[in-house]
Amino acid sequence: MSKDQIKQLIERHLPEAGLIETALKGVRFFHVTEAIPCAPVVYEPTLVAIVSGVKEAILDGNHHAYDSSRYLLCPMTMPVEAGTPHVTKQNPLIGVMISLDARVMRELALEMDAAPGVKRTPGGGVSQGLTLARWDADFTQALLRLVELADDAMDAAVLGPGRLRELYYAALKGDAGAAARRAFGVGNEIARTIDYLSSHLKEPVTIDDMAAQVGMSRAVFHRRFKEATTMSPIQFVKSMRLNNAAMRIAGGMTVNEAAMDVGYVSSSQFSREFKRMYGQSPRHWGQSQHFPAGTV
Image (cartoon, rainbow, N blue to C red):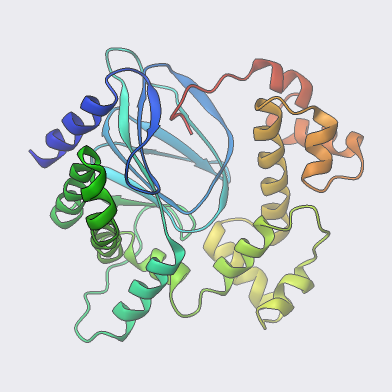
């Protein structure tokens, strides 16, 4: 019943296709009625809960679908492909996207690691970088209490931070909890490296540089990074650059501008690597893209 209530609340605010910011900071409702094939995007740390329809995300070639039985938790910035290939007007995609506040998640993760008697649950589904988790009772109730605040700006301002913290806590206790605590708690070196890479895409970077930054040997860093993201560090950097460029091109930026904006010196090298990853030239790809709100 709680999921139905969440769906009704979202539909009341967003009866037609679209994407809206709510009165709650970092909380967006989406309603999608068009089928869109998966396309390259970059997920920031976020939680996505679906109450109608199915959404897909692809990480390093592995397809993962989630719906009203499982939510997605992405604790780190990740280059993925995402879309809504099975959506129709009769079976729309409806849900909520919640940006994760790193400071609050870190505080909770550290408090939980220090607390006695905390139930440790294995990371479920995909990887540390992209995790699917069952909608358990605690998560469902916390999400309902959160979205109820969207009806009143004062309630959202006063009670919102506490309700968000409650939802984060429910997620940290659930199937995605182990992966999220690794990303935000003690030993979060890989997540910190990814944060750094995300804000320094234009700069040249080597595995040795990344390993030295977190005090690991090259071999240990490479292994830990691949365990967390399913990709090697260099593969991850390339995917981040190409996905960011693809988003810029879809938004109207020229191919050359997008290439330079993510650190490519040679536009011909950029075009070769883009075509190798996505199967068509960046120019042709940009001309074929159309992203209704909420698809990514």
